[in-house]
Image (cartoon, rainbow, N blue to C red; front, side, top):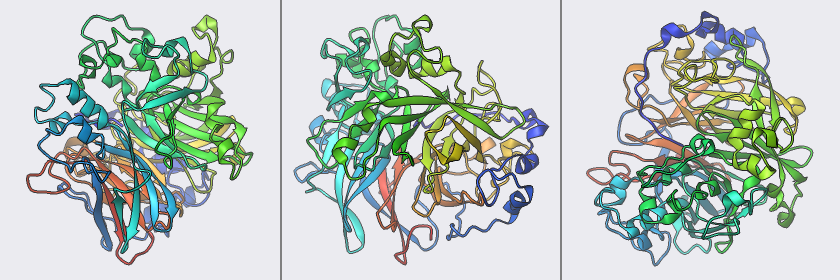
Length: 620
């Protein structure tokens, strides 16, 4: 996920009166109590006096401190930070920035993001964590101004995935450097390409004439996990690692994915020709996929699942449908891109892991089209099939095979008429399996660029606060071609903007306001945890909102309470729970002060653990 700090203008005068904050309460079910999508204005009016039975903690205020703040009755401790050794024979972290690539390859990667826990026993588990990208100002003593070939290898070793075993001793989880599953997966780990794009000419390079073997995964944003025990890591802004020193002709598809023939800030192409567009124009096509990993087997080969489409993946939210088919919801995190779902061809077989591990090999990818009425904040939607030969995905329109539909999934989505969205990020399926939520983080281009209409689930021009859309598949069938949607909340600032949607929906107030919802996830009880990656300037449109934070919402009442605030400059991202729900693991990415060790220490991305002082379930 891309963090940002953008200066925005005041749009309070631009909002249509039909979508005033007051009218929002009665125009949608976003803050309604009771049944999902129940259009009951009496029930919605309860929002003013909401008292959730799920949210049993005292909300905390915003913060601008260089620390983590949680409610009274909770404690925070660190699990591991960038550079911590994950093997017994690994070097300890050294803040001087002079450690080499070999040292980094045996240490926890940088910029922790999405993560999942895989229980082994009551007091032991495997933790799989994404390491999205790295910050050269901290990684190197020269801050990236005097790069060498080994520096590039070090940067490549700082990204990817870290897999470690953790154990609980005396009530505290710790990382076990002797764990048999411990592993680093980096930008140089060999992977196999599976699915419709495997072996296609557009994936072939001089180093891999088969188009089936890829080195590495990087810019791994969020994640998913499967009931057959594998980890799904999602490749997002892969384009930023490619570059060129000479003029290279780029296709419209290259540009759609953000590929640029110029000096990359990461400078990999200067020392590794895989990333030089002049020498390997097909290499970008080998990235931007969902990768499936077996966390229990450190010798296993990660699999790039091309049936799930190529775009800037945020996370992969998986649900086993009542008919046995597995459905995976996917967001494409860029302004004006789309929301997808994938349905497996074959059905899930309880306990048959060998058969289930091929489920993501074949299936059908769909993209969402929402009803877009300018005065409606709820409506219908449909899933449009992205299959070669259907819905205009033909040779006449530039597609020659199913492989090309998957490689250029963005263009295919445009071809079939999908709705452009305000940066679809994390998707989460409610434990009842009937409702799905997706964060739409922001979109400064909404209403400015052609095709990005101000309507439907994207109701604000130049949206800089974000919203959360939710939908219910028809007849609770995730394989259905249709759904009903509304907005669970519209983030905003009611202290700056008054009776309009930039103030936010009516479940947003001065005590729980925030901007740019990003990571989300449900616990077993159905609490919706919301993490932010937004503007932390604490001024202008964002006055009073403080540092990035994590909130907790009740999907039934619409109530939202702030649970955590992060240190200076960070994004709060990554969320998972111990099996007993008594420890919450949360990621603190790219802090810019002195977190986690204070004083003059170098800031380090860190996974923190939150527990309740009385030993109870988080949030209870």
